[in-house]
Length: 134
Image (tube, rainbow, N blue to C red; front, side, top):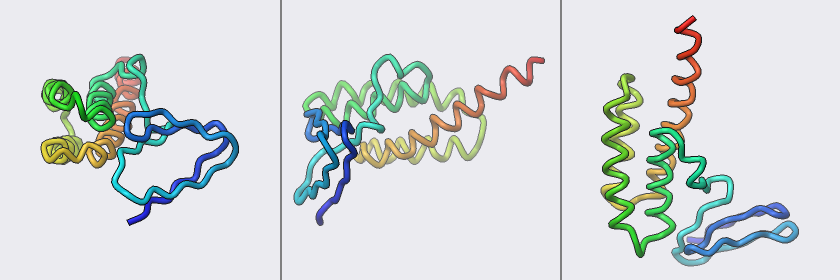
């Protein structure tokens, strides 16, 4: 199955661990299995500053750095325990469990989708904290 990707000028993506940057508008067709992550889905270590973001970063690293997957899986297990303990919403817990199931099956790309939901949930929950304190 062919994956079609369009990149804008200057947009980056990771392909099998290599960072690729488009010069000009580019349309790519990937015709075999590859580890691909678009630049907007890449998180830096500095951006991993909340429990959900730390989980995303560990999962992203497991996905783009399979040679060190065991180390990254250990980080995922540690981070998911921290996050599950902090969640109160049944829906958030379900998403966290879905994330854990995908990560256990080494579907790190699919797990990243669940983790993006958790990041948005976490940001919304954190935004409510100052309003409750007033």
